[in-house]
Image (cartoon, rainbow, N blue to C red; front, side, top):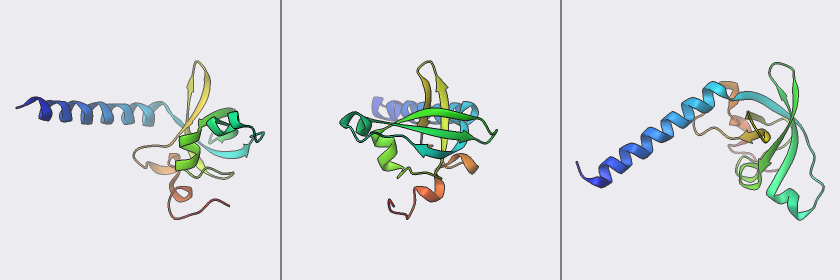
Length: 111
C-alpha cells in the first residue's frame, strides 16, 4: 500500500467520523429570521435566529460560504451546533432527515 492510498483512506475516515459527530451532536431547526444590517461584515458572517425542533429559539451565525452555498433564507431547514463562540449554522455533508437543508439547497433560487 503506497502513501497516496493510505492518505486517501485517512481523509475518508476523518470525513466519515466528522459527519457522524455532527449528526450525533448537531441539532436541526428552521431559520425564522435573518438579521443582516447590509454592511460588508454581514457578508462574512450572517446572524440569524433559528428555531430548534424542541421549540427553543437560538441566535446563530453562518459564514458567507454556508449562507451562499445553502441558499439560506427564512424557512430553510439547517443543522446548528453549539460551540464556545455560540451557535453555528452548518450544512450537512450527508443529507439526514429533517436536519438537512434539503429542499432549500436543491433546485431553488434565492427569492
